[in-house]
Length: 341
Image (cartoon, rainbow, N blue to C red; front, side, top):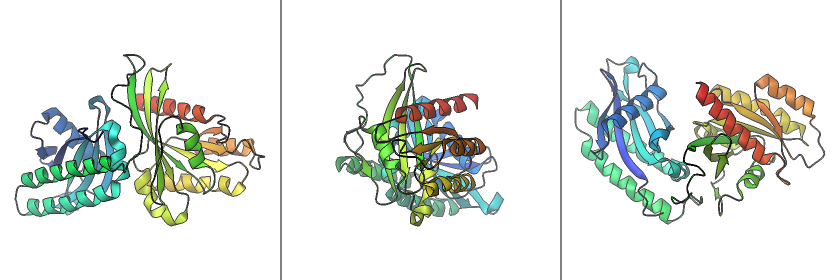
């Protein structure tokens, strides 16, 4: 895996007279249609049609090209622009099934990309070219990615290139899912039950979140889903980090412990926090620890799920009840949502 060419390119885009456009990129062989697609999608999605910039990090997928982009959106001072800044983005093109390497090393990568953006801003303000700067940054990142993989900072069992899809007409999708809820509800156990057949070991981030990966084939729908599963800390001291971790999720799993009323009552807090900070996401309310004597009634839980427009399911991490069904239903719900939008 160390020799896999994971980083495919880097693009600096900005909002110009004709809208979002790529200004500098490397390698120079990058397809023009791809450059336009990256510029339009990264800036329009993150800054809006107005081009108004707010600093933010995001992952944006280009599934038809089997690529993802690790994007940093920022503003370049301009007296004639709305908000006195022009929206700009730096996009790292990644082979999408290796997203985990960038997820795991997000803090270091974010610091690096912010540092290069400050140098680009200085050049743009002084009408200097940033082409050489971008090339040097690209090769520096290539070296860092190799170090990340060599030292096994990520410990996913990444699917081998030789593993074929069950049928030629199968389609592949990547979905990022976050599990939220109070401490001790069994989020980590739920993921371990689901993923234990999928990889050798799991990555444990320091304090803030656990990240797991699992591939699931839905034979009837003829799709293969690569789940990136984020087990978000329920501890209050990490709340400031959660927006960054949850951003870009395709769905949310709200987990409570059916033996503890306090964890059930906390679901509404998580739901409101996500809607206020991230925006509405489709989701499922999950009552975990079905193997134990319940204190939260199924009727109360169903009423809450209906009120919050969430799916509802009860699971047991201990014996596996409904765990696979949970993720199958989530995959189908996301697919249906994206097909209808």
